[in-house]
Image (cartoon, rainbow, N blue to C red; front, side):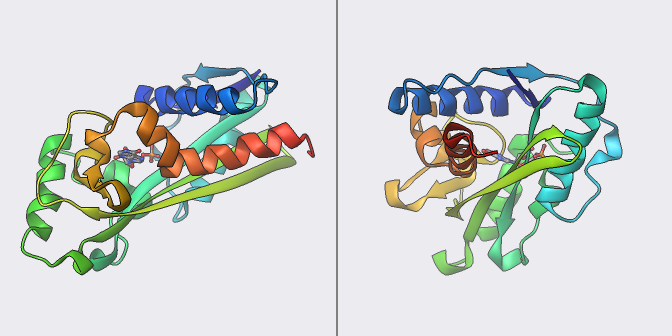
Length: 200
Ligand code: IMP
């Protein structure tokens, strides 16, 4: 049993879906994942990299239960804003609702040509077996910021994240589709491949 530490139910739902789809491909892969909600200190994500933030969360959680821990840290990076909001994505504009944040970015790019709307989602996963043995995996998916929020699915910035090869936002995708192409899918597939190969 591995414990996935998150307060975000959407992230946990997606990771469960990614695992379910992975098990369809590899039926003998019998990983069990439990959600662990612990009170992480407010200032735990103080680092400038997803990796350090994810590792710090894993170390903190391991110290609470002394069982193998999985964490992730993710964010949205907009090229023409030099990567903002990036690793600080969950903390920007604290007084705005998610819908207001989506409109803020959509309005900002609405007069810009497509090449200035490039963005990406980044996800960094850490698996920590004990204090001295941990591994990490990264997933990146490129996209464009939409000039208006579209779709009711997903969470966070999904209604303004256009996935170019399907010409729709993550907010317009069924969860199974998002979970076959997303940054989270890419990172967790690497983790599951690693665990399946058993070389750790
Ligand atoms: P953190 O990993 O808890 O620091 O939060 C990352 C933040 O990035 C989330 O609160 C969302 O705003 C955004 N984010 C990360 N992944 C996704 C995603 O798959 N969909 C939408 N927003 C995301």
